[in-house]
Length: 152
Image 1 (cartoon, rainbow, N blue to C red):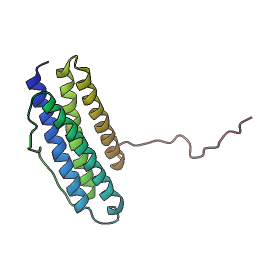
Image 2 (image 1 turned 90 degrees about the vertical axis):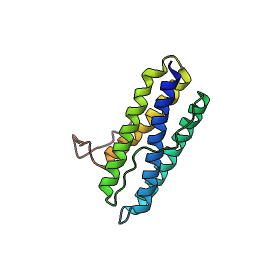
Image 3 (image 1 turned 30 degrees about the vertical axis):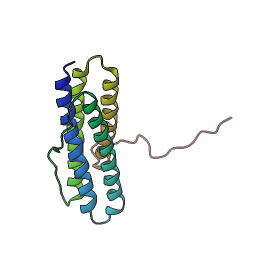
Image 4 (image 1 turned 90 degrees about the horizontal axis):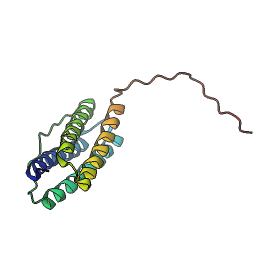
């Protein structure tokens, strides 16, 4: 394993986590209208989750002998709800791609691989949540009526 390449990759992931955390916090401030009640909380919760990811990445970078970056990746902002959600989806996809790119670098370092895989799982769940909020997956219901079967 090329430790310097891994540290550079982890720092890229860390920069994305910083940016996403700031972006979600900013979204929680800017959101207005009927959606504010639930989306401000969603964005603040996501910001806290991203901070947790940043903490884990920063600690691992130091454990590998590196210095964590202090520079965030590009931060986007909007005052339109759909655009905020779309920006969140884009940021999560960027984070997932960066994390997946590291998997081939870690080789047989099982703890590091597990950390990256856990972050991938969290990020994929965020992606799926945004896709649902943006109604990107069209569901088809086979029947409109459902009856429970009587048991015994």
